[in-house]
Length: 539
Ligand code: CP
Image (cartoon, rainbow, N blue to C red):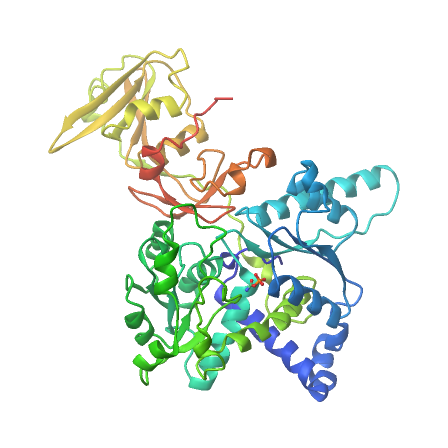
């Protein structure tokens, strides 16, 4: 098991982790429980949970909690820990790629890499790269006749840009469960307010990604452009989640919620010209505001740090306020960061197999359509008078035929063809592409057709007759076909050379895709408008 994105975990897996965190927490605070229950269940006391394990903390963004709670978690459970806290003093400053840097730690036998980066999707790429590194080393040692027993290191994402902060999310969920237990309310249906800089916070982004899985009810409130990103709303809609966007009405969001998660304006990620003053005034939670809520004060969480220098998003007048549970929340950090590597390295006996979640590959299915040969007395007539062999791609969304032909590579191929656009059909219009020669479409081309124009039909013509008519339907994962729209995605970092990949999360006229690395959602209409489909066969 790796801890890369909350979207990799299902509900049972999440509750298994939260239960493990609770067991670790109890064992650390209750010696009897540690000796009599924990040790019996997991074959070792908590202080030896990670004995003999080598953990590296690779941080290129500043951190107090994630870095040092990971380190203390390692030290208190018998692991050895080392790493770096910035790129200074590493060879990243000499132009080495992140992948090559991480590969070195795999090559030196580290069991766990905890990493923080500004590049979104980098942890998943790191996993893929170090797995390949490990495999290559294994093979080379074998060829050299030398034993090799380093493991493929577990990757723990300690935050990648605005994308994910899964260890924080697990400790947040643990805290919510603890509060839910006080209130006797379950996580499913729990109303949670996400406040302040929703657009740029990886903490909020992680909660958003897990909300449909756990059935959390989200209430957003933020000033102007700091509200949820379009892609986040698209994702929640596609997953059927319950959410309410209250605009800048913080009071309504808080009154609707049991737990409010406030956040720091991410000034390091906010571009020039953003209205920092607005968010400074809007986001400052004061005792006065809490008084206004009277008896409807939700439990207040904050991942911390609180920016007391510039934004003061939790005003000092709320210091040690009853409602502020953010310190308790932070104290769940080390327990969470002990349990996660222990589960990943099979040091805890958990009744759940984390490896069962399917890794989707491309699934192209075909809807076979009826060929009515009577109406094609001269076969292919309705499809446009192809006398011999050929293909007609029919019912193409009007206005997309010419670019589709380009993406499919037909523009560069010397195949005889006709492209017709805006043909009238009943009360609408369509485009059409005809290839006037024997031609076999590749699955890559069928994939592109189903993405760009999902209602298209493909007619295979032999000796002037339509012999097959079908519609390809995209599913699974799409590889190397679409550039990710997120400039901060690892696939857009030239020197890392990462092949873009997307997963289909909702099928239809406007298919919704999710980047395999950075999780950004996209719609096929937007991809078409922004000309981000890669051309087939183009170098
Ligand atoms: N909550 C959190 O991630 O804090 P740090 O940035 O200090 O790690």
